[in-house]
Image (cartoon, rainbow, N blue to C red; front, top):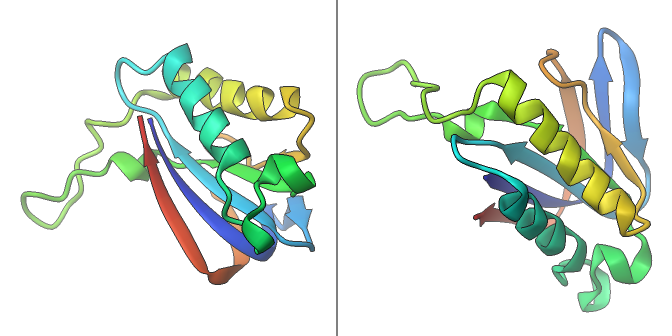
Length: 141
């Protein structure tokens, strides 16, 4: 499992012209990609890192200040571009495998009493945010 964690001053996810998630205070935008063989252990690691990394102001974590989080499924994190000009998506898990694991990441963060919004799995989404810092961190399990 891979996740790209970005500290943001504000963020929104829009699908078909409708805002489905947003925040206006400092928070995190987390893009999550799932690969073959991922399971609960990988979910638990991503949840712990997203909740506990001290990347917010004053070296606080999302758990410390109940910062808002938006989680967006992102299969393109497993693009393979070693050959040619067309990415291969073979490293990304199929939707029927990936969707419940991305949902488990969201559920795990919510179980920690964090405020979590999401995108819409499989939809074309407009993800807008102001990267704060900039802070962008790649998490891999």
